[in-house]
Amino acid sequence: QERGSGTPNIRARNIGGGGGAVLALTNSALSQENSRTDGRYAVWQGRRENGNWDVFFVDLTVPGTVVALSSSPTRNEVNPVIDWPWVVWQAKSNTDPSAPWQLEAANLETSQRFIVNATVADQLDPAIRAGRVVWQDFRDVGFGEIYFRDLETGEQRRLTNNGFGQYAPDIDGHWVVW
Image (cartoon, rainbow, N blue to C red; front, top):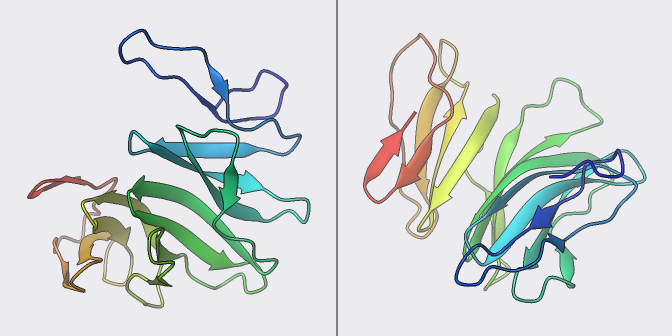
């Protein structure tokens, strides 16, 4: 994100081959933050006029067509990640201060949407690769455990069991790091 006008906005640049000019994906008076890409698509969270955060995406080969993935006046949606066709983000009710952050997934090919793994505790910092998502989950004793779900098969499991806290997971191939 770039704060050229004082408000964060999303920028992109192709660094392959001959490269290219910087693309202004957003030019909003409201904050546009936390961008991620899978190399073809970009996602980010954007502030709305009502004060909520929603999730947006764009095909970087057609950067003028920004699509809102979420638009809820009663929820904040933040921290999106993408690996085509999946987008995962954190969602939380803004009408209930004690509501937990829960992960939601959307398949951009099929329009399928669902809660990744419903619980009554916060789920934070998702990472995704090849339809498999990992995140920090606070449903267990301690400062967060790492959980996994395959969005295609539905397989899910807890990967860690340590009360000291596990943070910032990432996944690629058969490896998860935190």
